[in-house]
Amino acid sequence: MKVAVWDTYVTKKDGSTMHFDIIAPKEIRDIAVIIGYGKEYLKTKAQEGQALTSKECRFCHMETVRPEWKAEIEQ
Image (tube, rainbow, N blue to C red; front, side, top):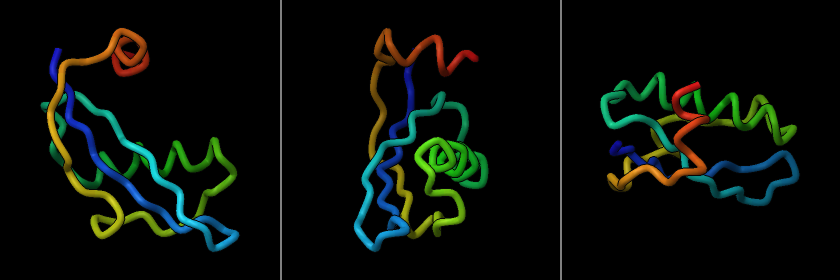
């Protein structure tokens, strides 16, 4: 299974920068869907409401899914 990796930088509530990758099935190309995944992740880190747009999130590359990612992606 191939996945797309989206390189993401968000300004945290304390003003520092948070970097994370959004991993999605390669078939998903709608930036609104990708950003939705990122916003859900931000909630888990108590950073909901922080700006996350196509400016903060950019397609980086494709790679073969890592075993630890596969179950979460399929969910």
